[in-house]
Length: 112
Length: 111
Length: 238
Image (cartoon, rainbow over all chains, first blue to last red; front, side, top):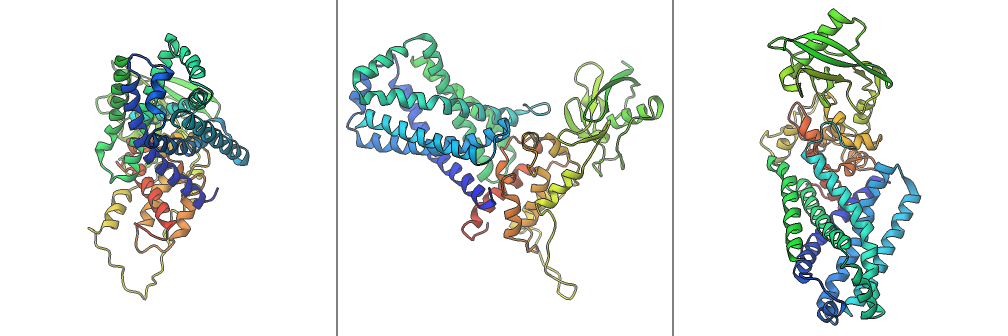
């Protein structure tokens, strides 16, 4: 991968990290608050369904993660498993798709 | 895999990396479970029964700590790469660890 | 405790640690220990040194797991427990014999990172006038004192994990040239340092910064390269 592509990957990783910094902080705070004492489907869904704001927030979260996790994993696969090249990048693209699809499915289920 | 006489920076990076890997493995499961709400609230409740199991509860807490640790470590990386260089940045690893601990405690106490 | 128990690496990539007992003195460096072994106990021991006063970096070895300049490492500082020292060659470099490593790849990567000056002025031009307090020059000055000892390279986990990684020293030097206004290599150098095994592979372990005997921070220089390569995508520079 040439310098331009590597630099773009680095930039996307840092940008998604910045977005996730906010998303994770909000998510952690919300979860610590919401999960006190356990929860049921009805409890969760009564709070979340129909909320446009949360829908937008979690869609952003899912898309940022779908980008951030595979790029992060790319270094790990190369450095710890010695996996380089097109095959690895194709697998990571597949992971990105998986996270995005499953994630958006969840967002639709919980917030729409 | 830890380098010669590992120091704080090495541990911080290691925790950041391992937490990232674990979170990546956890996410598809998390998304899948939440997506089951599309079928029905009952389907989701069936999955939620799993979360009452103590081992699952512990893993849940573990994931929360992983997330906080990864966030802390990530903020450390962003600080090192974007802020003007200063010696105090070496203390960021400790700050990240402290943050993860606080979040873990908050979650555990709430449970 | 007036003797030291020393283990020294003998052999090449494959070998073993050989034990020696060395008289302990009040003011004694690890280099003194190695020299004593070679002169009094085993003349076949191979090791490198030159200035022995902390200026050349030739005597760098792994002492109780830590890469250091042996001439500037007092035995008292290096001892972990009791009176034992384990001395081996620097990590991440091929071992020629005993404590001597092959430094060629270390310097080859320096060249690959374009860690050399490219100027444009000739003897007919006036001197370049660089204010020492200028923003760019101050950044260069904090990174310029590298003497190529390879302690940072030996400390770096990424070098261990990725044999192609250019490494902290080469990238640090490249940064000093990127910030040198007399240098004209420009984007050519950024292309050399920002590729697959370049600056973006640094994972901020800070081992290099922790171990550099000249208190340099290659991590900071590499962070500079990351930002600079990003800005150059838009035709800008910092």
